[in-house]
Amino acid sequence: VASESAGTAAEAGAEATARFRANKTIGAASSQERVARLAGRVIKAINDAVFEEQVTYDEYNALKSWLIRVGEDGEWPLFLDVWVEHSVEEVANSSRHGSKGTIEGPYYVPNSPARNTPASLPMRESEPGTPLLFQGQITGLSGAPIQDAKVEIWHADDLGFYSQFAPGLPEWNLRGTVLADAEGRFQINTVQPAPYQIPTDGACGQLIAAAGWHAWRPAHIHLKVSAPGYQMITSQLYFPGDPHNTDDIASAVKPELMLDVREQEDGQSRVTTYDFRLDPE
Ligand code: MBD
Ligand code: FE
Image 1 (cartoon, rainbow, N blue to C red):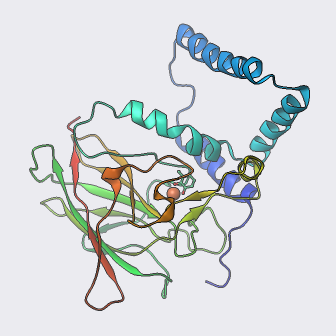
Image 2 (cartoon, rainbow, N blue to C red):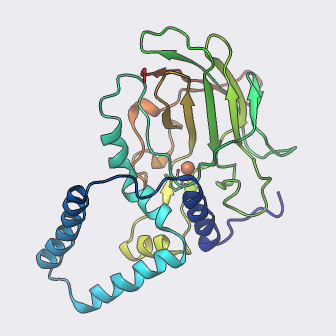
C-alpha cells in the first residue's frame, strides 16, 4: 500500500494509449463518402465556432499547442472517453430492450483472472476500503436464466487508483472475470471503490483547470456482462449519495445504473444486488 501513488498523467496516458493500440481494430471499413461526410461535419463545426465566437490567433495557437500536448501525454483515450464516448454509446445501444449500459472508459484490460462464483476479486492481503458483496442474476429479456454467463469487473481501489494504470499496485488488483452458475447467478466479494479524479497534471487536467471545471467521476464499478448468443453489456454501477452522481465529468451516469447498497449486520461490510437482462444477438 505504501508504494501506491497516482503516478503521472503521462504514465497513465501512455499505458491507456498502448492498450488501445494493442486491442482495437482501427480504421474499420468506412466508405469514402462516409469519411468525407463525418470529417466534413466535424471540421465545419469547428469553423462555425470560430466565426460565432470570433476566435483570435492567440486562442487558435493555444488550441494547437494543447492538442500537441494531448498526444504527448497519451491522453487521446482519456479525452475521447470522457467527452465523446457517452454519445457514441447512446447511439450504439438505442435499440436494446434489456439492461442499460454506459461507456467503457480508458481502463479496461481484457483477460482478467477467471474464477467461479462465489468469488473474491484479486486484491491485496489487507486491501483498504469497505468490503462489498456484489451479487445478482443474468437473464434473458423474459427473465429466464442464462447458462455460461460471465461478469468481467474492474474498478478503482479505496484511493481511486486503477491497477495497471497507477504505479505500486499488483497487476490484476480489483480486476476479475467471474463465471456465473447454471442459473446465471453471481456473487463477487470486493471493496467499495473511491470516487475517481482524472489526472490533473496532463493536458486534460490543464483544460479542466483553465475552464474552471472539476475533474471528478463519482465512485463506480465497471462491468462487461456476456453469455453465448447474447449481446454483451458494457456498464458501470454507481453508489447513491455520491456528490458527483449529478455532475460526472464523463456524463456516464444514468438513473438505471444506481445501486441499492445495504449495510450488513456486522456494520463493517455492505451488500448490493443488481440483475442484468441481456438482449439476444
Ligand atoms: C475512468 O475511471 C473512467 O471510468 C472514465 C470513463 C474516464 C476516466 C477514468
Ligand atoms: Fe472508471
